[in-house]
Length: 141
Image 1 (spheres, rainbow, N blue to C red):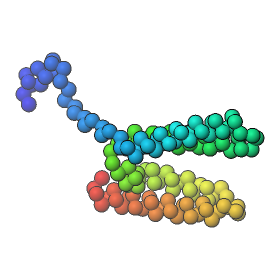
Image 2 (cartoon, one colour):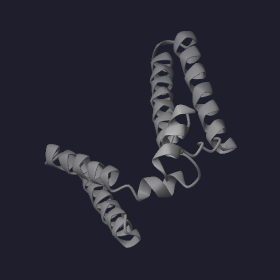
Image 3 (cartoon, rainbow, N blue to C red):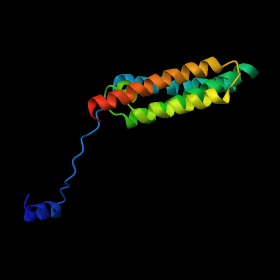
Image 4 (tube, rainbow, N blue to C red):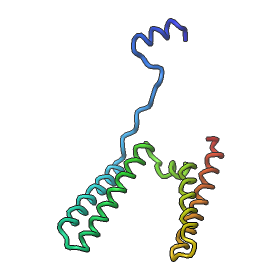
C-alpha cells in the first residue's frame, strides 16, 4: 500500500489487525456449565442441610463441581470452537506437563499401594506426549 493511503486509514481510525470473532458456544458447552453450577448449588444445600458425614461429603462434591466448573471455563475460553478434545490432545506442552506430574507421582510413591495407578498414568501420559509431538511434526506446526 502507498504511504499516503496508510496514513489516511490510520487517521480514520482503521486498524491493520483483523481478528475473527469467536464462534458462539455450543449447546453442549452451555449445558455442561449449567449442570456443573447446579451441582455446586445442590452440594452446598446438602452441606448445610444434611447431617454430619453426609454434609461433609456434599460439601466436598460441591467443591469438586466448583473446581470442574473453573477448569471447563478455562478450557472453553482458551480453546474456542469445535474439536476441543482434539485440540487438547494435539497440545504438546499440556501433554508434557501431564507426563512430568505423572512421573513425579511415581517417584513420590516408591512402595505405596497406588504405585500401579501412577505407573499406568505415566505410561498413558507418555503415549499422549508422543502422539501430540507426532501430530505437531506431521502437520508442520
